[in-house]
Length: 375
Image (cartoon, rainbow, N blue to C red):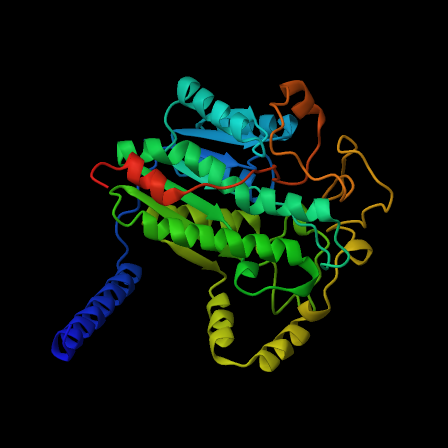
């Protein structure tokens, strides 16, 4: 390509970028009619508590026809389903261990047969371990990655093909601003959320040529849920925690407006801008000022997590500790080939707020090529 043609291509690219930016600004000033949710069937993972439960209520309030909740704690799922039923929505719940790939596909099939096609999938479930790398148990580190990141592959692969066939669908990820700006005391959580962000960014680009199917990634600041009950901020008046109801409201609005990425609150855009401009030494001063530089989990913040026992613990001996699943010894890696657990076992096991177990990933380009005509 000659210099003339290259220059023309760059000018065209600049023009397209300016046009899309102008459209986005105009859309904020004169927002288009929001998506009508009356014909949608929404599935929310980790829907029994926290942000997931608030999302269920918000979708019901905005007229979603059917709302399906997935989780591990049946009591919470029942209560949340009753709440949205009282609001006029058709509520359903399924006890599902999303760590098990076969069970995800089995329950997805059950959802289609008993309820119908899912058109909005909300990947919300997550847990936090809240420790430094050297203080972390190997098994717990693996659990965080399976829960917060890898499970989205299974759930999305289970429901995306049908969305592509219908040319109607939306994949939503409740992520965290820590995906873009990490803190030292939650290495597992920050890593998993950064991986999740990359997953959604890749998926969003992969769906550009798929009419009617879109994606939204929400990156909220510290939210006042059980999972972050023990988190402390140096200046809470300057950096107040978000309320789950506000996060849920803004998330559903983003879905209705087909917004690809949403940072909450808007001041987080300034943080991302600072990270792209200032040197690392200057960013460290920001962390020291906010108090995140010295953040630690464990006994200092019992609402996040308690230190795992040093003695070996069997995988069946799991305890709930306000947002952390304490599991067995690092010498015992989690099995990904475990058979389906019975519903009775799932009912007995207690898990932290909005958490589930997840598995490993897949190839979305191949998935899109197979599910999309002409690709």
